[in-house]
Length: 309
View 1: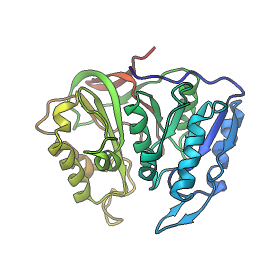
View 2 (view 1 turned 120 degrees about the vertical axis):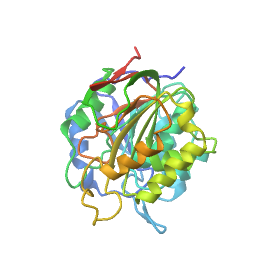
View 3 (view 1 turned 180 degrees about the horizontal axis):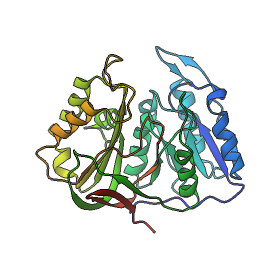
View 4 (view 1 turned 90 degrees about the vertical axis):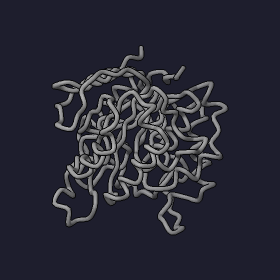
């Protein structure tokens, strides 16, 4: 049974970690102020604002980032752990993650993008997490709801979402545990001990900055692994900055060619399919709870209803 962390109270402490890419304080200060305005304390991990160049701008060495994350997860004074950003580097930490104290005092882990692999690790150990906006605010900003809905979840209030239908949707209802996140990370974990368990689940995918052939390659990887035969439904979120800047839809949240490719790969599967859910590397990044039991209703409108009590 998947465990939900207990709701936060005013005065609880949220740890800030940077398990992947480096970040400047100016990129997270707005969110830190927002966290404090909600009545929570903030504690930055030692390397959350660090910098280590190893062909990529990491926030620290693998050992430093792992130390920060294990500290945050297993510290009884911490009530939630919020990632500053994704980027690349979370995979480095999987073999060294340990949950000895975390299991006695579970806490919400919040992030998306590269953080998908950490969230898969947590779910393999039967702990839910929040697939939602990191502390880093994009250059174009983030919708207020992207953060507000996270704070609602932290208080124990589950969201209920309703979105417009899309021409590529497949109607139907499904009920099951929600899994997924960033498609590239889901694809990368296939065949490893850290991969999601897809059987009878509802899968969510989103991505950014992929060439169209790379998107198709990842979808083919999932198909060849039998993922689409195992899941009960699928939700597709943001697909933006796809191809290159010559793509006329490059800046759009839900690239139509990317969606066409996804629909093509799903054509032989009669599962409820919902496109354009507002979660991903986009302005509206409404949080989802990985590990939650949900009901997916796809008709003239799409509803996502969280069933956990």
